[in-house]
Image (cartoon, rainbow over the protein chains, first blue to last red):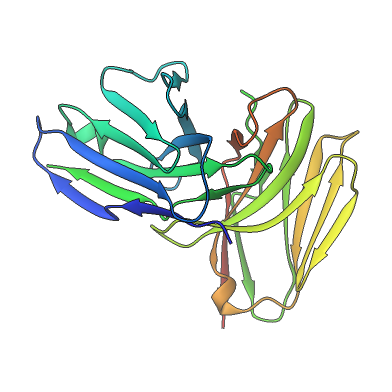
Length: 114
Length: 113
């Protein structure tokens, strides 16, 4: 079945630094990838939609300069949290869809900014 | 918001009992899915029901969909302690990008041994 690998699973960084999270489709070409954010005990909120080779579409209220998304190939999308602050601490999850209409989720990244 | 709303927010039952969780949504959908999430972990896809379907079964899971009421329910029969997790419904909105999902707030299920 379709597998999405997300790395790292956990990361702790200092305030002001940047963190890159990778989402890789292992056995299929992901035409579209989605990035979600989840605060403790809350729902998943869609942050942005990225299509290979084009700019990501951000949801209302999501700062595109802070959350940089790159979808340079059909198997890799990255989310970079720039100048991270403690309020950016959250659980980030990616998902990928493919032409046949299916989609699958990565295992998530727990970001803690200290 | 187009997100679904689950109720109850928390459910606590004994092993062997059935657990029922409900989800309501606001707009026309292509499909509705249920996911499970263990604490601090990724999502596990449980079941997908399309807008033209009314009921689906998968093992101990039974999902119903009532598009006239814009609601769905997830029934877990003969629950086990290992079923303890958060359960989310997610809707694929008609006309929206394929794969773009809107999640509800989730139900935290605790099954006591």
